[in-house]
Image (cartoon, rainbow, N blue to C red; front, side, top):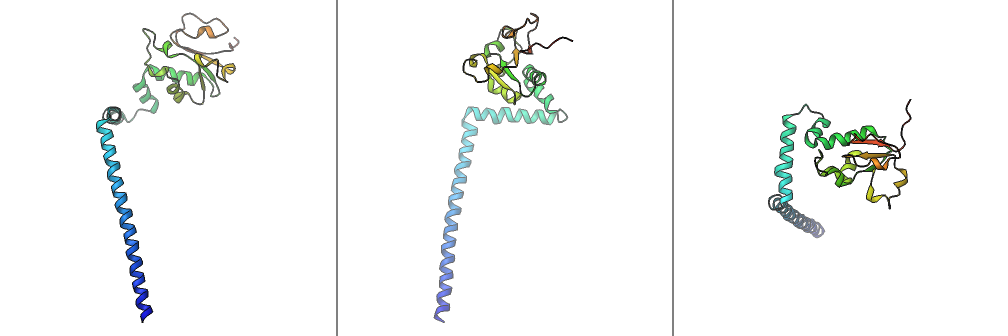
Amino acid sequence: MQSEKTTKEGKQEKQRKTFAVYAVWLARNVLFMVLALLLVKYTLTKQPAYHWVYSSLLKENMATIKKHPEFTFEEKMKMKLGVDYDYLLFIKQATPENAVILYPSQEAFLKKGSPFKREIGNKLYATRFLYPRLLILESELEESRYADRITHVAIVNGEGKDRLPYQVDPEIQHAVLPVVQPKKQ
């Protein structure tokens, strides 16, 4: 009888310990959840960049998506990015996936009267759209291991023509041309 009583007490003691461990675990998780929610609230309300992303960018994008559900992804991108997207799409369609492109500098995109926005001159921004094509900036020609493998030159606002080994029509303002001139048939 004694051993049966000891076994019951042992089980009850074990259950109390298990409950105590669970209660501590639960309290700790609730505390961290409250702290995480406070951090998110603070970030969204007090940090200007996050406030802008939430209140402006996300809400406006969702309103546009709901207003034009029939638009394709490309149509939405053209509507949002305008000429920048058209030019990047043009480069993507005019070059093979293994192309190594000499990409214009930020200054070339920002010339007076240029139709482009500031972002397109950012190499990382453009790479996002043009991957798997490789982009090389003129400032990287000295150190890039791909400098001798350039297959195409992107021309923006008339800049970049001088990097081609053949004459280019002076009227061309925006293009992407192969380094090796295609033979006329």
